[in-house]
Image (cartoon, rainbow, N blue to C red):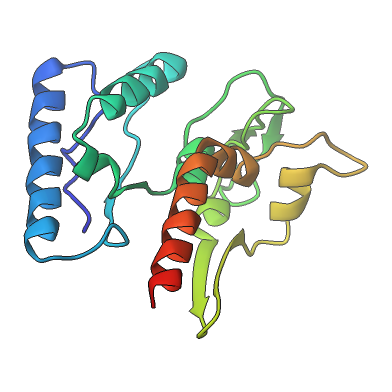
Amino acid sequence: MHPGQYTVLNSPDPDVVTRAVRDLEYHADFLDALGTGPESKLILHVGGVYGDKSEAIRRFIRNWKNLPENVRARLAIENDAVQSIQTQTPGGKPYPSRGRKGAIHWASPPGSAPNADTGELHTSITSTRRETANSVLVEVGANTPYAEPLELGSSKMEPRPFMAPAFNANVDRVQANVRAAVRRGNRR
């Protein structure tokens, strides 16, 4: 399930957070009532930056920790890599935009996620899931020609990673999901 755009856990407005928690509780209770397991997820975006990205992330984590367990078990974060690209990081060099005639694209500084220009990079991020009787394989990637040099760097530029930080921010959740899948598989 994907709660609405107004379900924002990292809002600086406590009333918005209270309503977001109620909405997430409603969705989790609905899935619980259907008898679905924790593999049925509530997909949520981290939320806005509100002028201070670090504080926005801290607010999200603080509010996530206060969620009921049945909500936390189901919560999955969507598009962390996309959001890091869409959040413009100042400090890079200006270049002529490739996709917007006459416009300037400000590159992000080395080590920061790439700044969006045409939107092609973040719209190219996809995931696939394949299951067999013995395994589940999930692949996530971006299919633009410049995704890999941005992520890993090249002989001409330092890395501007966007996929690895998104994975690293969610590694605990990925590991928990894998452990839960193994436990379910062992019961069969």
